[in-house]
Length: 113
Image (cartoon, rainbow, N blue to C red):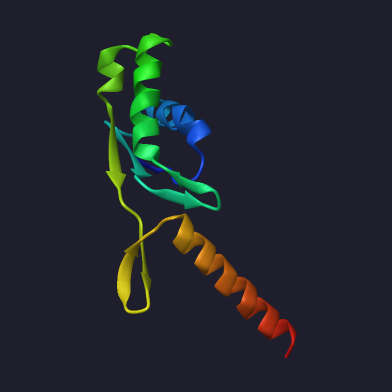
């Protein structure tokens, strides 16, 4: 079972629980949470991989989730990129804001036609 989490670092713990539900129901043997190392938004960049690893630790330490259960869910981090002006660039808040401004100007141009 695969869970791809991109935007909400506050609900990562719930992704673990969803995967354990599938595993305990016999619909999966293990789970993987895939998260970006560089989730960009208007105000900066979040490293959701670090957040997921921290969440797994907190589930063990404070929710007393057994190690056997924790081993059933792996975490994979990846770096997001954007292809712009003929080359790949790391996705960051600058790229996010450039893309957002381009979308706004394109939308305004369409409305003025």
